[in-house]
Length: 257
Ligand SMILES: NC(=O)c1ccc[n+]([C@@H]2O[C@H](COP(=O)([O-])OP(=O)(O)OC[C@H]3O[C@@H](n4cnc5c(N)ncnc54)[C@H](OP(=O)(O)O)[C@@H]3O)[C@@H](O)[C@H]2O)c1
Image (cartoon, rainbow, N blue to C red; front, side, top):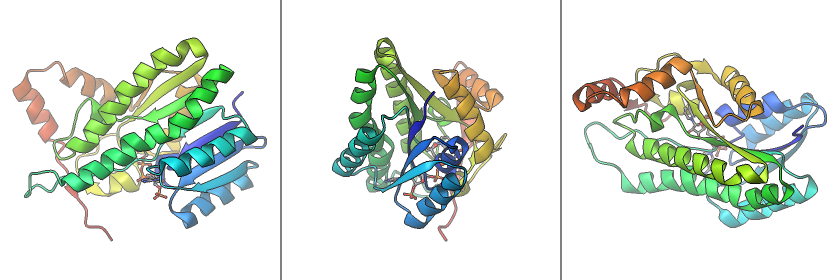
């Protein structure tokens, strides 16, 4: 049974909920994020449940720092499961109607390069040991891209493709890759914009669903089911209908407090 977990984006939202969900006696957690106070709070909660916790206050874009920390963690205790939850979103302002390229490239840096920086030190070690689980975060937005978040949707579609490709590649080495595709989970990320948000879930409920999916080594862990099925089916509809459906999900960024 997997006892050693690496979780990026562990300070908040889904990463935080997963760290607490997995915390138990005999479990080792390596928690990565940037917000020191929030990481300390998760660590305290996980330790209270009996887990051993190590904190990496690291920006996932920092390839060298990620490499050094993850190799040290893996040397101390071989990683059984890596959960790459760190991610950011952005909503394009309606009036501007163009992407802010700097922000879009920053987003790709976190959502794509951050994941590569997480896997590069660990995946070869897991493959050599012939065991391990890798959980990557796509989104239902990868299948039904919201019109105001093209960069975000593109980054998540890339992760779905990357995850499914590596799943096939790593299978023979005993390492299973799962792509997690949530709908709307109540976290800082979904609270940062206003839009239609059907069938919302708490981060704790989402963490339990993700855990069940990872235990079954599912390729795609998508929920809520009805939203995922609707997102897949709309891809088959004629473009004018599809466009109207996607436009119903237009979003407005909330002012930052
Ligand atoms: N919430 C949803 O409904 C939903 C739906 C589909 C997919 N997802 C995906 O699920 C994942 C988690 O989302 P969430 O809703 O939990 O978001 P969240 O509440 O905003 O949390 C994001 C986490 O990512 C970390 N992070 C962001 N940039 C980072 C960086 N450069 N370096 C290190 N850590 C960084 C944050 O840590 P610090 O603040 O400490 O840096 C935080 O812990 C994301 O990949 C997201 O795309 C979420």
